[in-house]
Length: 178
Image (tube, rainbow, N blue to C red):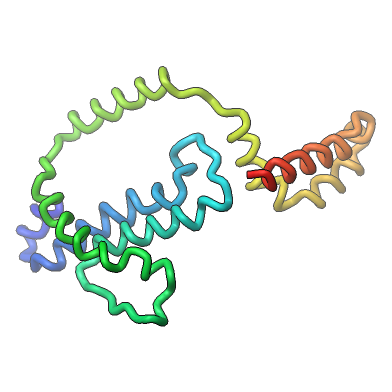
């Protein structure tokens, strides 16, 4: 599609390559490399997140066309893979040449097949779902939630505030052991 648009509008090859790189690497794969829990039902421990972010940065850097200058003041995560990036860049050009055009019908057929396969294979992870709910809501708003539960008559009768505090303590302990 981008090759076709580039040819139609007389876009330079470097600009066309940048379009492809931006579209493919930074919009599709980089977020998934940095945060796999966006798509997959996995719990990524806090100590793994910085590692995933470094890999994401290397991936994006591999798709850029201009080489960045590295020196001793460069951030350590940039220095880790700076010798490998030129080799990765050489692999990118042929990658786009090998891509074959796909019709809408083929694309949606493949997506349906993948979806059906995942429905059969996927198992819901309660622990991962609880961890995500805890990280997104409970940890952020725990004092407001506990205050609201203490003020609600029904919640007070069921002692929901104290039960939630136990859950928070349990989640904090399980997070600390990872």
